[in-house]
Length: 589
Ligand code: ARG
Image 1 (cartoon, rainbow, N blue to C red):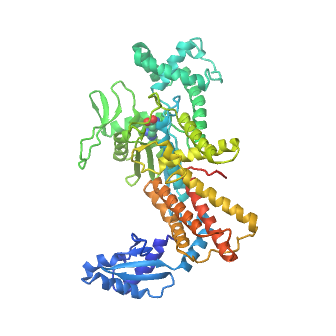
Image 2 (cartoon, protein in one colour):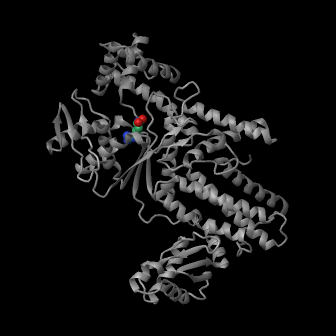
Image 3 (cartoon, helix red, strand yellow):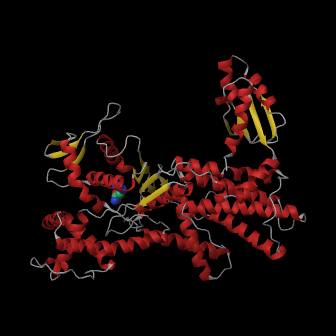
């Protein structure tokens, strides 16, 4: 379905033209004075300067042209030249019926379903997920879902950190613990055992131990670096250990992401970029884009318009090692070969800003991506504790993601048990769903780029702009619908939504019309918080409507059916939106 603002503008444009004014002045927006009108057009003010007329005269001309149009219940010109607009209730009811009977609730899908890569998650293999991984996972998942729903061909890639120094640290720590392993036998050439030499539990001990040793023990550090280089150069026994690490760790990462309802289309990583790196370096050198500087190989990326000086991008260190940027460039070459995306969206924290400026500029300069390919680095702010510093555990350590989720589930469980009489078992299950929603909504309702405070009490509150409030509204609608079914038992599918008979009802309908627009804008601006704001407004509009209208007690059956359909549509819009945010609703709470 067309967006309501576009539909109104489509009426205004010919009216402006018929009065002899440019159509471009016929822009319509939501009213910023909802007490006076629903929509407004301020075009007469801008047109006045060009046509040397009083704005109010222009506004009057246009309003006169549209007099009696059935789409509007009111269209008035007011000083100094605003056009105030109200939609006709019958028109609005038709729009509601259109939404409820359309695919995807009348969403206007994109005309060109171009390919978009969303690079998010970014977990590092063999290291546990900590709270720092929460934001990229849930923001990325929302962006991916939004894009897919709008009809784009979106590919979400976790882009694992699976090729770094942690691998050498694990290999050497493993050697210290189990020197008898076949992988450490220099003369060994046979088949590798299929069974990994460690469980995930053991791996979670081995990595921190190796990493700690690297910090205090110079000899061990050297060994770890050498092992990493040997692995990277393809030494088969280490490659076998690496395969085991990958298998064990990725299975665990999958489980963790699953429990967050975060699902990737691709489980690729830095290691997949490695085959492209020698060719990449050769190409940059041959074309004179890369040059030696203090032993390293670099590419200049500075541009005249830069407001501060940007250092060149290092492609290869003086010791011959490739870097993070090299691997991201290799990944771009692979993605271009396999998917030809029109757009890339990378989601990481702000501290990687320079890295992505460098990578994007080298990719464009070398022509690895087309000039028109959009490269977006969506940077997120830090999740802070109440002290304003990055969130930590009570003893100051880095919090594991699982523990944080467990804490919030527990807090929600207690809240549910306080005032509900559902069984403890059901409360546990419900708390898991509501807890995750509280956490995700608490994050997504903030502008991505802003830092925010992790405030458990506020996140789990059933009131205000919170996840639990939205879920509570959905559950409330579900319960009205099942009460209606029990009491009336009527099938309403052949009925229709009737024109609103009171302000609260019309306000709810007007809120519902914004759905199409909101989904489009939120994705275009990579701003999931706009969906949060929308469903908060919609929930408020529903709760006001429900307060004013006694649906279950209504005696006029046609009116009752209409309301049942209206609240069903409200529930469907809310459920669609939370699903896009990666949030689920329980049956009861
Ligand atoms: N693994 C990286 C980190 O922990 C994030 C990866 C982001 N994606 C990328 N293509 N560089 O910082």
